Amino acid sequence: MIVEIELAGRRRAVDVRPEGDGWIVVVDGRRLAASVAEAGGRWSLLVREAGSRTSRSYEIAFEARGAECIVHVDGEAIALAIVDPRAGTWQSRGRAGAGRGAAGRAASSNVTAPMPGRVVKVLVAPGDVVAPRQGIVVVEAMKMENELRAPQAGTVREVRVSEGMSVEANTVLVVVE
View 1 (cartoon, one colour):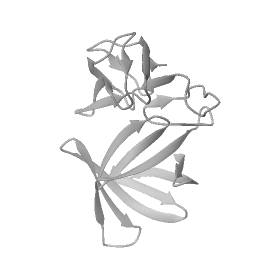
View 2 (cartoon, one colour):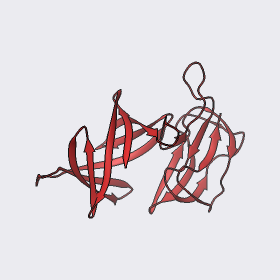
View 3 (cartoon, helix red, strand yellow):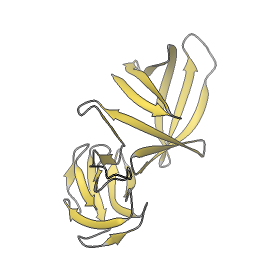
View 4 (cartoon, helix red, strand yellow):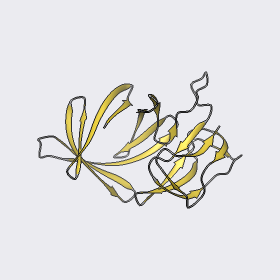
């Protein structure tokens, strides 16, 4: 699977393929072997250059923030945008393609499930005013609870889920205007 990302203003194609118990990742022609494991609410990523015996371990956490995904690598926050291959547009893990106003801000934002899971808690109701990064829904996925946050300040227009509901990846959970 090839995923297009934008990192530090540079667009890159990342080829990710399963191999054995891990993954082969090719970035800018550089071939890496990677394995990932959940570790105490975060992810542990073990990476080595293909053909090398030396590996490096990273602690990884993900956070949807507006039109980008923030990836925390060993505590350092890195902004990352991902191209949605179905729409050919930029989208984050926590928000599907929303309309943009003249100032470049989203007119409304759909907060979506980053992966299949179960809604554990709904923290907002229609009409609630939310601040940027305020928790709005908690989804349990892969035995981890993930608090999804408001991508921008605004008013909750719609809550499309309820507690206990199962959701698929990219399901719209809440709409914020």
